[in-house]
Image 1: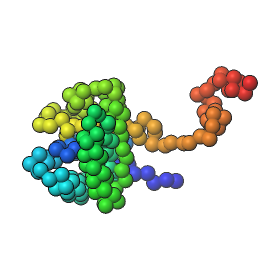
Image 2: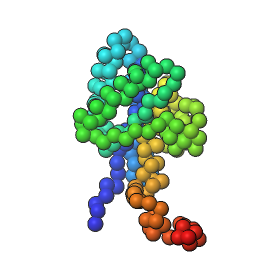
Image 3: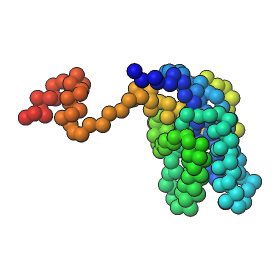
Image 4: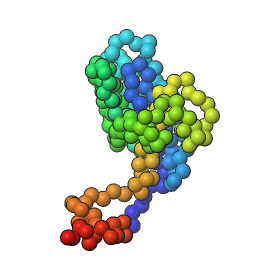
Length: 195
């Protein structure tokens, strides 16, 4: 019999080179509680390498403080400016390296996937995501920067993936093996496949 952990702490990060948002939640079975959310500001730093150093150091401090079981991070998205994408990629890589330096597993989600998980729409605004998180996690204070709720959204998105998939996944070698394991789901289609 597997001894499954009943609780887990998930840290979500919205990487950025000016402001990095983070959120930490505690998952207890099907319930989720807010532990913390906030931002790490780097606007006062001009040197891009000092910004990366701060991201690494602050991420390690957050990991040591909250002891997450997993780090969920937002993937950089391609906009019109390739330089912005490269900067975001560096920021994300540094945060990932910080987690890996503490033996924390990392999962990456696209911005669209995160928005869709939280609001049901991949085109939701930052404000809509923040409002839905306030309802889901029952908190009233609006953070100064929406980067904080963006980081929190990544953590909640990760939690939803476990809940909606039942925490189990199976890989099938083809349609026939799927049908074999899911006869009730594909009732009436089996005879069509065999023809």
